[in-house]
Structures are given as structure tokens and as C-alpha cells.
Amino acid sequence: MLASLMRGDDKRLQAHNNRMHSDSKKRCSCLALLFAAGDAHRYASAKEKPMYNHENRHLNIFHSYQAYHIENNVTRGLILTLKSLTPFSLRLFIQEIALKFRDKDDKVRQDNRDFDLLADPKFSFDLQPSPPSDEEKLRNDNGLLIGITYTGKQDLQINSDYLTERRGLPDGMVSENSNDISIIFESKLSDSLYGDQIQRHLTTYFEAEVNPERDNIFRETSWNNIYKVLADIHRQSTNPLEMHIIKDYLEYLDRLNLVDFVGFEISDFKNSNYTKLKKFVQTVVEQSQDLHTQLSGSGTWISFSDISPDNIWIDYRADKLLLGVVVGSGKKWRAQNFQRYLKKDRQKLKAALDRLHAELNMKNRLFFNIESTFFLSRFRTDYIWALDGDLEYPDDFDRFVGILTDPELNSFQRLDKSTINKRFKKFIDDTDAIELDSEGRFPKWKDKDEFLQYCFSDIMVELPIGKYINRKADEVVTDFVSLLKSLRTFMVELAKMSA
Image (tube, one colour):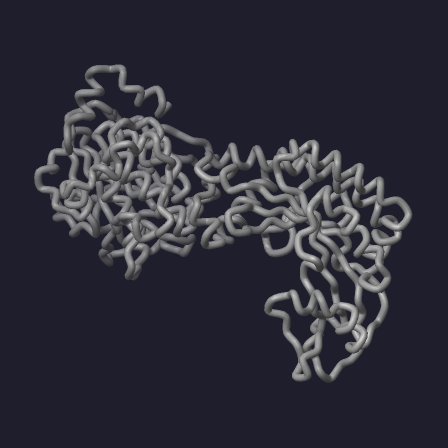
């Protein structure tokens, strides 16, 4: 819908979009000053640039150093963004956010009032608007109240019988004089209750004769919906200023974690944005139910409900996205079964790895980590991570199998600390940030001397950052689901080896 309306092949539309809002000469906001001061080079070629390219969040025009009253800042950013839109784009936003709504059966309905997308551009914008006089109050045919929350689904039941006499002060307001409509915004960054505020706004800004339930003047939407509509406008826009400001506002919403997974940016990897990563994993699971995927662990782990309890974990590593298939973790008997299988027939594992490597087109790095567990109790367990570091496949396959089948290094026995520190000296010395007891011995508990030792391993795939940044979210998710299919096939074979 937006694409067809914004193609710009209509000369009337092109001329219309070249006009400014009626109050443009009066604009003295920081945004207008920013671009008037010769900053045009930052957005002149925005059409060719990725949606986000800020590694430092403070280069975003909406992100301040002193982020007090965040809720007010986000609403202010929205109103400033709407103020920067071309008249046609702004009306598209109004049409999608305010004039479309969900009825009681959760079906999308279109408001039947007249709304001319190409009318003369006569707009006004305000933050926390002053209460109107009785003569200026809105009616059911020229006013709407939009509540913005995280999910947009509080389903408030507004009843005129309970309208309060107290006055309210909403967050923002946009008036469209040519189409005779004013839209009041009340925003929340979470799904916190705001019914009382909505009741006060209705009392303060609407005529007493208005029945909010009958006249359907209160509607809810989400930040996610705001994001999607603005992103659609950005994709179809040819106006550099409009594109730049939308881009920064969308980045701002994303960094405040107000929206679903919308794609990765460079800063997510540099700053290990785990909130973003969890949204990504959640989306992947939702889009791969035919593979029987389910969330596990802390929200960055995926397992298959119809396979053994081995998991796939996802994490950042510098400028890479890392996947690890855990083999034998959590259960001693499973790790021991895997060791026995390798002693008997290592070639079946190699054949399975060869198939996985081929399905990955051998472009993604495949390697192993081996972790040694030293178990005393649930609360007294320590580890040496990555014995011998990263073991590459296929070059280090024999070394990987050799460690796991070595009865000295993968003993499944209780070892005293003297034996532990003798057998694992090289690994202890090579491991950073390992904790020792007061006598310089590992593990760190001085009052205990025996620990159950055995190994589990991770078979890992490394995905370059270039495969995931500056791409549409659905493309990233689709690629990852395809990768999961290959890992699932491999894990079916792996489950037989540790059963």
C-alpha cells in the first residue's frame, strides 16, 4: 500500500512533497538548526547507505548524554520526526497509525472519515499541549486519542460513565487542519497501566457529548507498529532530510529495546547487545517451529524438543556470531557415552562433520572447544575452558578426539588436587582469569581436595559479521533457520553417539 502510494510518478504528488509544512518558517528546533548549519553531507547519499551506521549512540540526533525523562524524550523524538516528514508521508503515517484500528474481534478496520492525502499542507505540532477552552474541545468527528505502549494491546475499556473531572496533560499532539483532524498521543515505554490518564485526557480535550466507546475515538498501537510504518516510509522516500531523521529515530527506538528484532548493527557486536540477541533467537524459534525448536537456558539457547537434550547456544565473539553445539554437558553418563563411542568409531563423527561442513559450503569456520569439569557439588564446580584453545576442523580433528579419549585428561574419576595440578598444569598456566587457592592450586577451594573430573565439548560454527549487519530482519532470520536445519540433521546423528 505505502509502496504504491509513494512511487512519486504523479506530478501532483511530487509537487506536493516539495512543499513544506505551513509552520516551517517558524521552526527553530535543534533538528532544523543541525541541518541548516551545513550538515547536509551527512545525509546527502542516505539512499545508498545502510539503515544504521552509528557505532557511537551519541552520534544519533535523538540520543542525549543525560537521558532523564526517557519517556518524554521518546515522545518528543516521535513528534519531531513527524514534523520533519513531507506532507504526503505524514498523512500516510496518520492513515496507518491513527485511521486504522482493531475492533473487538481483533480485525483491522479503516476509519470511514474523509481523508485527502494530497490536501494543502496545514499542520501544527505540540508537546504536552495546553488544555483547550470549551469552544475548542474536540468532537467525535475531528479528534482521536492514540495510546502507544510496548505491545499496544492493553485493551482498555473506556466508558463515559467513569470519566473523571480531573484534567490530563497528554504527551504530544498533531493537528491536520486541511482534513480537520487532531491526534493526541499518550505514550508508555512499557505496558504499565495508563487507563486513568486516558480518562483524564478524554475529559480535558473532548466535548462532554463524546462517548469514547460508541464513537471509537481511543485507539492503541505499539512502538513496533510505529517502527514498521516509519520504516516503510523510509524505504520509499527520496527526501534526504526525511530519510535521515527517520533513520535516526528508528535506530533510537531499537537501541531503547522498544521494538522486536529489526536486524543487527555493528554496535550490537561491539557492545554485546544481549537484549537484541535474545529477540533474534526468539524470532528464529518462532519462525522454525517445523523443526521442533524451543528456547532453552537464558534465552540465547535453542534446543530441539524431539532430539536429545544437547543445546545450541548463540553468542557474540568480537566481530563474529558464534554457534555452539554442546556435547555431553550436564550429565556425566552422556559425556562418558560419547567418549566410548569415539574410542569405538571416530570415523562416524568425522563423516557427520564432513556432511555438516559441506552443507555450510565450507565458508563458515568449524572448530571445537573442550571444557574440563571439576565437580564437588552443585555450588562447588569449576572449569578449565577450551583445553588447547580452538581446535580447527578438519586439521585438529585427531587432537580433539585424542583429548576426549585420553584417560588422563578425561578420566571420569575423582582426582585429588595434587594430581589435577600435575596433569592439567599446562592448561592451568595458559588459562586467563583462573581462580586458585591460597597455595596457588586449582580448584580454588582450599578446604576440599577431591573433585570429579571429566570433559564435555562444543562443536562450533563461526559466522562473519558481514553476513548479518545492515540486512533486513526477515532475511537474517531466514538464513539462520536454514543453518539450523543443517545443525539439526547433524545433531540427530550426534544424539545416537551419546545415547
